[in-house]
Structure formats: C-alpha cells, structure tokens
Image (tube, rainbow, N blue to C red):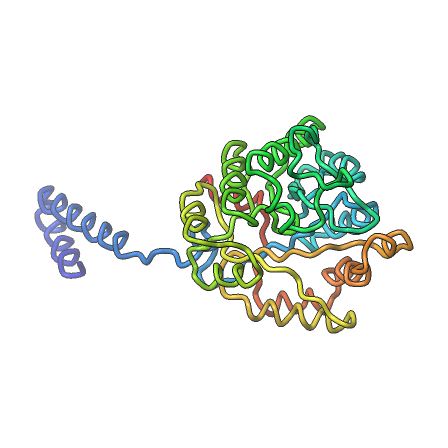
Length: 336
C-alpha cells in the first residue's frame, strides 16, 4: 500500500498521468475493502449497537411500578434525577394508570410494561385485564392470577398468555401511552418455550423491544436453567430468530442484611459482570405501614429506592467507567 502510493504520487507530479492516478485509486479501494473485510465481528450486543468495545453498558431498571403507590412515589425522582435509566409498569395493578399518566407527561423517560401473569402476595392481589372467561388458565380459584410461575405454566396455554399480554399493551395504548419496551414479571414469560415464542412474537408485532436475553451464550443459558427456566434448544432457536435487539445479560440486584451491605453487594455484582449490554432490575418503594402489609421485602425495596442516589455508589460507577443506557437509546442505535 505504501509503495504504490509513494510511486503514484511521484508519477502524478512528473507526468500528471490520469491512468496512474486511476490505477492508484483502484488499489486504494481494494486495500480499504480488505480493511473492512478483516474488521473483527462484534463480541456482544453492546458492540453491535455501537458502544465502545470492552465496556460494561448497563440499564438500571425498576420493576413493579404501579404495583402500589409506594413504588410510584419512589421511582419518579430516581428517573428525573437520572439515578436510574428505566422502569416498567404492572398494568393489572391499581396504581398503574396513575403512573401511565406520569409517563405521558415525561416522554423523554424510558417507561415500559412489566407484563404481569402472576399475583404473588397473600393479601394484595390482582387478576387479568382480558376477560377472565377468555383466559381461564390464568385465573386461580380466588379469581386472581396464580401466585407462582410453575402454577401458570401448569394451567395456562400460550394462546391465553398471548391474549393477556396483548390486552395489557392495548390498555396502555388506549390510555394514550405507547410503552418503550416490554419485560416479564417474575420471569413468567420464560416459564415455557411456547411462552417465550409468543412474548417475542408480540414484541415484533408491535415493534416494541422485549427484554430478550441472548441465550446463545452457554453460560447465560445455564444460569437461567439453574433458576428453573426451561432454556432448551427450542428457546435458543427462538431467541436466535428474534429480530429486535437483545441483552447479553439480565440479573437482579443482590440483597443485603444492611443498607451498606446491599451497596457493597451491588458493587461486587458490577465488578463481576462481563463487558456487554446488561439490565439490572430491582424493586424500589418508599417505606410505609401499608408497604409492610403487602410484602416482607419492604426493607430491601426501601434501600433500593435510596442507594442509586448515594454519592458513594455514583462515584463507584464513575471509577468503573460504566456506560448507562436505556431502551429508547438502544432502539435508536438499532435502527441506524
């Protein structure tokens, strides 16, 4: 390359030869094509989306919004102060519509739907948005969603699941808000291979990205299996054919016996995450007597409403060189 350019430069000065310049241009084009052809393939989804190689790109994501008033109160300042990047609403819950209205008033925020097919608490329950007569497999003897994922997987067909998650999306749209993404409460939509198929199908039909995990990585697939999710060859093939962007990893925020331990455990999680696109989910709520009647996890939820604004954790993120993103930014990059 250097020899050809040097000689052609000399000839162009002496002879002004168009033929030599043309020849040089062809050779340069060929060399450029070689550079493009030899460019290494992106290693992960962060690189595919144009983020710098070797970087940890993270979405700090609040689940269970709309589940109760305490969750809504907690997450609003977390989003507006940019302590976290994303949140998702449980449409069947009684405080969902209030947060949908807030999302409409804050269009720059990344707010999705936490597609909900379970109702896990003992004394605070909810049921389907679709007509219960059309989704009988989703309804327990109390007329609510089943408490646990295995119960849903045992009783509900994929057709019923699809009908209900579409109903939740349509309710949000009818209220004037089109969600930026969709994910799955308690991981229910990964509870059966045919649930995964309808989850991704619905995402593609609406053009709304799902919290799709790239299970082509054997370690990621095995981690999901150890939690009881049936990530078999059929699921891996479904994920492979999914046409919207994917996460390299999804992981929950670790718990701690104290506030300090919760932050320390979170730091260890960040250090353990490999480069790539990772979503970390958690469940922030402000502490009230009412929250204590809903869930025994109230203390952890309160700490998760405070920790991301903690100067110590913010400084840690800066020192680690973390890049933060959200689903709105991911889709902008993906469409390019």
